Image (tube, rainbow, N blue to C red; front, top):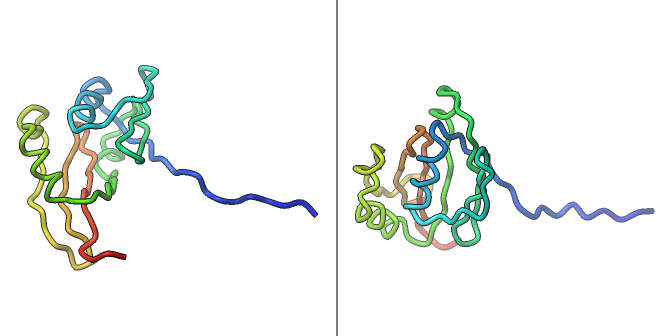
Length: 126
């Protein structure tokens, strides 16, 4: 009998970008690090989290694509984004921070391609 190791190591989303270079600048401005980039695909990291940014865009796909970014403090992230002038500099929008009925305190941020990010933290410790 053979043994199997089915433990998961990581899962990453491929986030679409209409203007790849603009999206890279946007995510770097937020504080993500570009670990590598081939010009059509980039590996972006922030702390222990990561995703792949791809030079691929279909409006219907991008405008229905969502990412959930779990952070220590949604309020601190909101203040950070506001202080950077991200909305002004990149023509994007973000909402106010709110407590949600599903147990999260979060806000939304759209990226330059229309991808919606929900940035939040749990209302109570798990």
